[in-house]
Length: 163
Image (cartoon, rainbow, N blue to C red; front, side, top):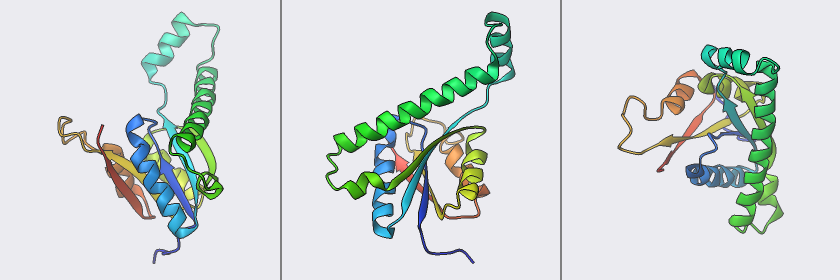
């Protein structure tokens, strides 16, 4: 039986500007449940073609170093976006921004990594956005969100977003 208590929310973001409503919703959920939010962004692993290109054109660079550097830059970008969000939304109460307990960037396949991190971080709820743009093929529509719901052993809240 699943626990109905929500103390930790894993908010997975693709860092698109269209994700603000999803983030707002995650904050509202955290407020209502007096929970904390862990923000997560997953960087897809480098393809064999990209690894070969790095090896050929940038032999002095190690592919793993390139990935680590990208993850560090993404983490900084996420922190900046979080700060901007707090300012832009004119959130006055300190509690609102303090519900974000951690910002994390990992490398892996999106859905699998989101579910793994939720388990590892003992999250009670995963919040993800799903594209609702009708011009995108229905096969592609919400593929990560759909896969997360299939793989997860904890509840997943899928929030529709329009780009």
